[in-house]
Length: 264
Image (cartoon, rainbow, N blue to C red):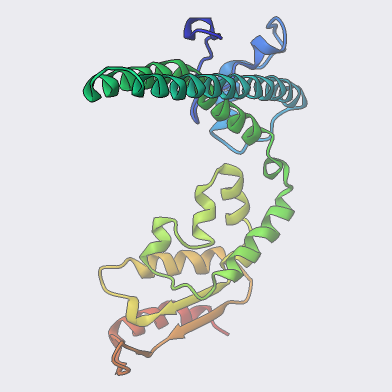
């Protein structure tokens, strides 16, 4: 059985730290990407070079092997200690110890088991985080051509076309606005595709003067370029009591003043 001090130390990578790939691929040299370069990859959707992909793949294989080893060790230790605990409980109930003494001995044994298994669980968590980061770097989405990504974003935008254009678009909740906040590549792709911005759906009863609708609307029209707009204005709605509610027509006129110059 391994003691906690026999477990090799593994530096946690988490979601913000880069894996130490250079140490797993041999001696570092001038062509080996630095740790800062891998941190930049983790925090972006940049496409890794062929050399970086090779290093990441090697580290991924090593990390997965270590993860399987630690899981097997943890299972073995947990099974052995659980068997010993059950035997101890049986022996205690046949002894002359008081109930409080029995519970105290069992509790101490359970705490000892936890101390033995905690280091393994910690290492498993570290390796799982590391593997997740390495797979993120190897993700296929990083290598999508802009044309393919644009088609995917268009499909996502059509799926959400009935969501209202309101302040929430500034809060990154609605396509295509939220695409521009993923990474630089996605932002460039989204802002460069006028078809993404050609669908406008406005639910008037959800608009108030406090919401910054008009600047967003002007921005969307500008980004749509020469593409024909598809505009939907919902002017009436029925409340919970099945009563038709009116809208603020002053706000409606402001919206129309923005839309009409772009209409043919």
